Length: 116
Image 1: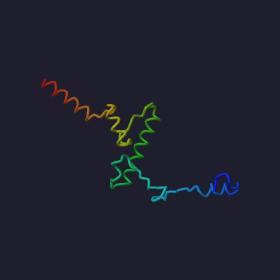
Image 2: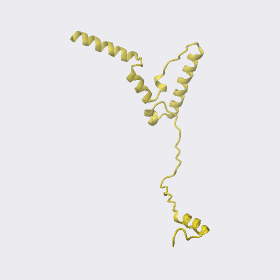
Image 3: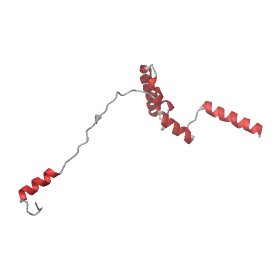
Image 4: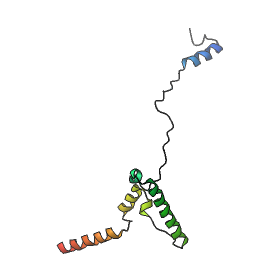
């Protein structure tokens, strides 16, 4: 049977029947949900005092708001409110000022000066 010898109505049915659509079976659900957790950092997720974490977050937020209301244009970056990755990036850039770290750096520089 030639392609040209088929009647038009039969031709359209043949074209439709020859197409096969393969729909992959989904082995996993397409939507996932998880409980939201109030944590300061990724490492805080496993802390046992969960209620304390929420109050700590709120304390830091209120401190930031109060500083901003009292006229400080930039209330400053609070390490405790940042995620671990944000904190690491700031440290790599040298943008974090920590008194203990500054003392350690000065001590290292003095030791380096004595040995040279």
